[in-house]
Length: 158
Image (cartoon, rainbow, N blue to C red; front, top):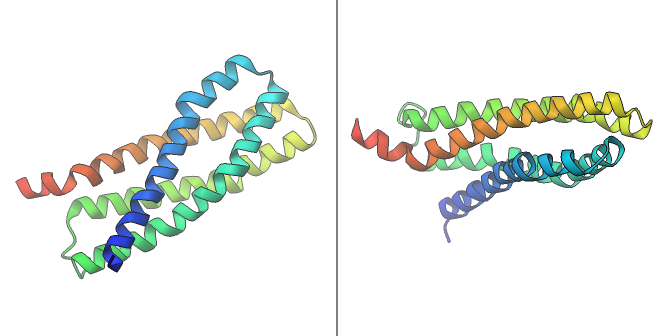
């Protein structure tokens, strides 16, 4: 396996883990937890889920730019030669990373504190903010995945 193949594999794996994890959490876990658990159990569950999931997101936000740049320069050699769809993917990826960093360092940090002191109302507000930001990031992640899957074919039509 050459470096391009390994980079491509790691890139796709990081996307699947991050976007797939958000999809599962948002569309499956969130509505079930909201329906079946009272705030103390629900907030404690989410804190545990985030503690398990966020290390994978950290790995993804490190791997994605590294492998993305590596692939970009190994295939097109320069920014100028890189197709527009790749620039769009990269720009949206940066937005996703910034949103994640905000989630991690602001509402997630406050959620942890609220659970520790058992302030379920404050914890619920933080979890709701995280939910909104994950919805935004999930939407962007799906758009990026569509662009990644179809961008080269659309670029070939122009």
